[in-house]
Length: 117
Image (tube, rainbow, N blue to C red; front, side):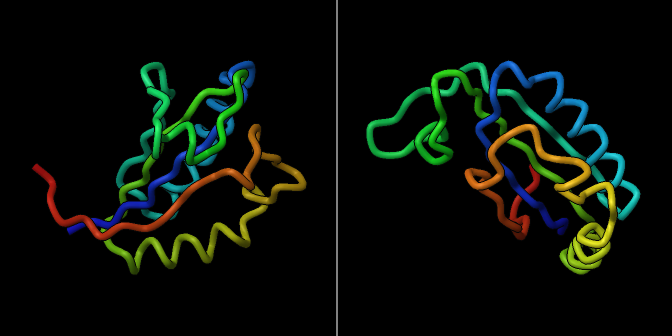
């Protein structure tokens, strides 16, 4: 089965277009390094929770929106190799290509796919 990297972030709503441009550049690099699919979603129906929620997890502020994204890889080995290359790729250097959101509140992780229906 494939391998998935998942991401949740709070992005200033005013930065939607800037975020999309940043994501398009990242998606091109992910695909260049072997990703099968890159999906970016912009929250428009993300309820506030009482115990847990996307908004609470990323400490979303009133002027921010929640973004939920994932990258599908053919395997964890391909993903691991890609991440090594991306860490050396100048396109991912935060000094020359800063993220249009607070990266300290980004949630991410790698997931083994167990069902794809």
